[in-house]
Length: 166
Image 1 (cartoon, rainbow, N blue to C red):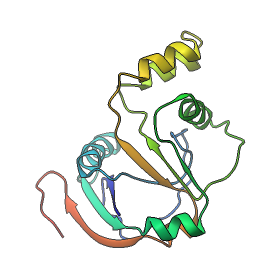
Image 2: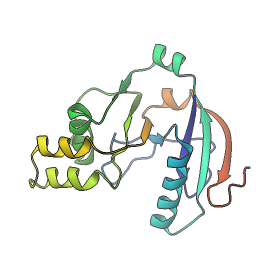
Image 3: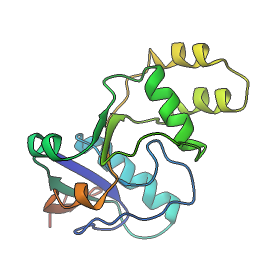
Image 4: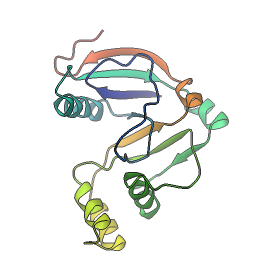
């Protein structure tokens, strides 16, 4: 399976880097199976960091082998379990099981207002979930351990603006 990572620089050897802000699935190396999503994210990261250029790094992972040897949490939908997991991680309050890889929907700009409204006490959990049901969300795979990262094989990088492959 191909995984794409969007950033403001080329990533050939991924590393686990501690985050100062809460992310959907906690600390990890975030990827997606959708090239378009990685391109969009590379542009967002480049604007946010005000440095570099939008770059997509492409990796391959043998998911069959990963499923046999790693602890994987997979959310099929942006449902109540996904919502609770994302909220706990966004609040940096997740205390549950540890996983090598977490796979599920991206809490993107379309759904973040609902999540933030819930976290701020303005929406009930049920109302927030209802608002998610109409969203068409891209996927993400967060590799959270060195064991997971070791299963990635680097393929290539390309400039997300020009499409030029390296």
